[in-house]
Length: 243
Image (cartoon, rainbow, N blue to C red; front, top):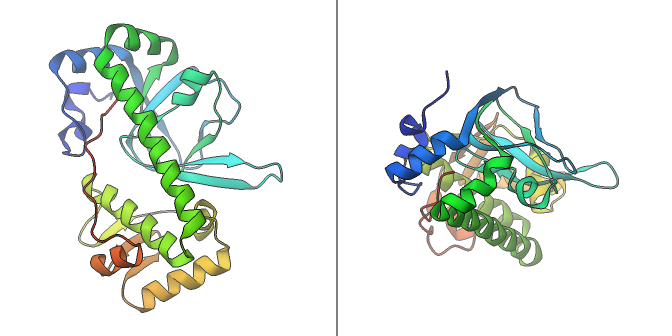
């Protein structure tokens, strides 16, 4: 069954900005259906010209680029509420790939209708611009991490950001959040070797700060994790639009 936009469970979360009735009605017309995919499914392929755009309703994925060597460079993790395919919608082809890590449910939009959104819904068009701007901001933060932070600071910062998003999305139960990725994925995303990543994770676990085993992230000492991440205190998450 397709979830009506008025009953979207993500809209109930304080992380996402409220939508007017007019905007909800437009999004219901903009949405062409839902797609359920299995883990490992490629949603978007680098260099492809996808006819569809997606919003993640449920599940997790990965954005990555394929290097000339054939190796995969992880860019970031895809979580519920994330909009997927904007590059294909604007630049005609994807500059990276997107793969489902878990089973996922996605709201599907026709790329051809994207221009109607800009023409008829300027507020929604602004929201798309905001999404593009925040992705640029996170890219800048990632570059700063790689250039000026130690390995343990990079990992701690990544865990704080993931944990905060997880709390806002209702993915954290107690201290636990599902994080079904490999250490190699984290190492790739943060520009670290697998050996160094493994040793750092072991140190964080043994010192009682955070544990990431069997696909579950458990934050044991949030304040200490923020301190290691060079964050005086956790910045409140900015309310974000939901497409």
